[in-house]
Length: 64
Image (cartoon, rainbow, N blue to C red):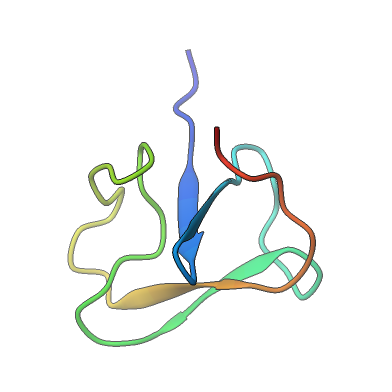
């Protein structure tokens, strides 16, 4: 079963499972001491120590 993928921006979590990163969806931009994508809302980082921040670029489905 594929893993769900979540990102957080301004306190709101988004379910980005199956959504391709890009200029109209989201990107993972360089920033120290943060992780872009997580395995659940308030979950564990998928790539710990990656130093990338989740940036919302368009309409995304909010996580329930």
